[in-house]
Image (cartoon, rainbow, N blue to C red; front, side, top):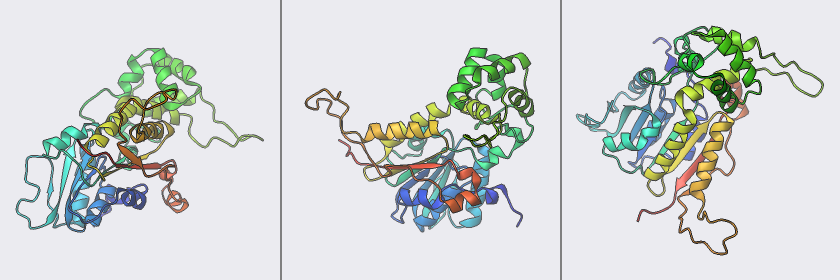
Length: 343
């Protein structure tokens, strides 16, 4: 059988994430909210050992199609549906099923409700990174390593593209995006050069414009060389802006924690400091039993703790995994467990 994209893709922190999720053959509901090509999802199905209901959500239809193929290859007896309409177990004696849903993971509550699921009693996993399929496909426009259209949409069926942003917003707005989301100190210089060079329609054009004003940092006595390409931070910033990644992540986290049943878990893998900061802050908010100002002598807020943090410090990939998959090096994993009982 020829090698496919789903075979090449390496799921980050596969064992650690599913361990933290606590998957077991207990007939519970499990959700991979960013199913991609199915690496984490297949491991969840494997550990269910024939008992459970597994949902996979992704906004990339191409990835979902590859995910389905990989599940069919590895679990030929497991019934798979592609939405809420068909019966998950129709015509099968299996006690496990997989449902693949096209949508943004921030809409998880609605997607689950459409499938008749109000509470998740197992757990929910989200890997926030861009998949290898997207990075390695020039036509998607995520990477400056090859030439392609300036797109960067994770869901290519809707929304504005990177080209729309680069060519239409003001220089100040563009500089703010590059500075805030890319943490690029030369954001104003880059934005000015981009505006001067408009229109830009390909990744190669944008890469060259950025490289012309961002010098590579060479090693010195007190500073190691910067190994990243000069365009790295600008491309990251545009991708985050195109997909509203931080806003979507916050919406997902708040929705997810609310639909978890007591004892169910949430596991999130993020890949840069902005994402990890959002996860850390929201976990802390839901884990706090009190939001009264420190000066109050007694608690008057009546807030309940809703989450128990299982990872006081984020877990990170092992050295072995980083050597095998360098793209995993920036990953951080945080996990929590729902603790408050419903009234």
